[in-house]
Length: 380
Image (tube, rainbow, N blue to C red; front, side):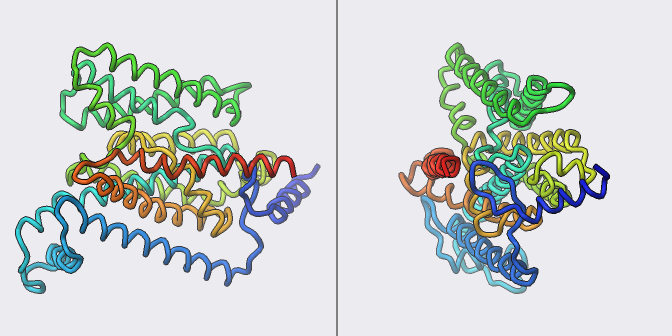
């Protein structure tokens, strides 16, 4: 078939595809008018922004010591504008709590949630499967093994940064192993990639348990909970540049690649017909998402389901166009993670639950609903 004919067929597939949400992702946005689509995007972004801001304000107000909303806003304004604009009339303890304890935690939670949401939406497009997520490639388990090995053998030479680097390195090594297993005929098969990721996750989870059980340190098990269930309790200003920079760079690169991600939704053959080197593009996108996931595990531990459920919510609202979906899921992920952390701190105060428990309690039922919906679509 001539190139022009193949391109026409591929474009026809892109135009005909319905909105996603079934057993496989195979669509780009529905045929809304440009003005209507833009208006809907602005409305959804405004709603997600309101959610994120309300969650952030709640995260700054609530805790073992409650700080009034007006006081929080005045403290933030004073930190930005200085004494010449805002008179300091609040307790010094409140300023320390808001600026040194809660604000770094809110920023960390927002950046991790946004990163996981973006990584999840990208992975689902790469494998064309709505049941995929950042942990599906085994990166989270590999990063946890890297961190646990560092603690188990006392290799923390440069403090917490060594721990974070070990987690990041563990995630990348895991990705390399999964790629090696999934590669057939010089190409990476998405189905084999998912199966390899699940298998490696099981192996590394067992290895983590082995390291804990054989450790002479009786306190190691308690510390490992941080990596297996996730927490934002370690948030500090000096650690924030890493996840924030990773989010900004990763989101920027992925938005620039949004049109190529849209092409993948029509199938590999159609994307190739339109000039996309599918295997090369998919490989480097997997590396990028693995790096983003490794950073989040390094600073917050393994937090599941954010990258699985939030892309579905965004697609239901906006369709499958990644030019709109990626910034939307980043904003929704930020608000969701901050809200989950707030619930984790409040539900059994003054103690706090690992945030991964909250996200699993929300994401587990949603995942079951996805499975049931996929089964109905297959029967239909």
